[in-house]
Length: 289
Image 1 (cartoon, rainbow, N blue to C red):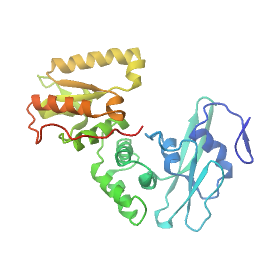
Image 2 (tube, rainbow, N blue to C red):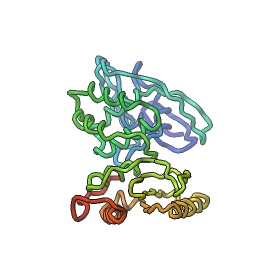
Image 3 (cartoon, helix red, strand yellow):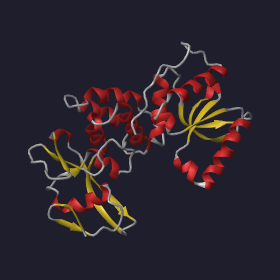
Image 4 (cartoon, rainbow, N blue to C red):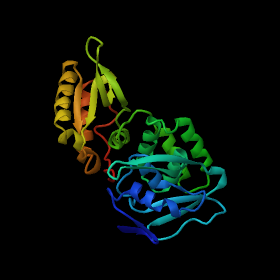
């Protein structure tokens, strides 16, 4: 047994994470409140950077009600005109339980995180929301307009212009933004590339069809899964057969120093017919993990 919050004792049946803590706290939540901010993002399975506190529960409540307080709790008050609440069903496979949790709407959650997330991560979260069909791009735009006067409102309006459907991971979104900020042309996202005879080869993470150049991001899963490792080799060989120039990116190319990778990408695009405006890419700081 453990006591995650004052007056609450629970048996630990699985990993102690946001979902488990939310389940443990749900009976103490004020009526009409909902999990919000980073907690709501994690409950939805969305990409949340490590710099956001993982084991602090964010809970919001409409204006006029007292936000919850206590150790491990961050309470927030939301204007009534912005308040949107729904439920999500979460399954804990380790503990073999299913439970419903109240959370704020996806659009409200995105707005709430504008003040906490770096700009690129706010865009990456918008990518995930649109690609995952949690919201439409129009709904994000409307939410950003309604957020006027709140912290992060200007950042939200800028972020809406950068959100695109397509990216399937946070690093893919970050590479796109880093590349464009360095002076490279905007890539297509999760685009199916074709061979010399017009046949479909495969969907790739980022590509520039006019220059037959593509980028594949390889996370730890690509290394730890034998089947994925083998299929990646086959994919790259098929791309080469179709005269596509494929680059492979990994975590260090995003989170440690993106500049060597961006310089390689710059050269490869130039070799394929792209006419850059400068002598090389602008210096880009790494993303936070």
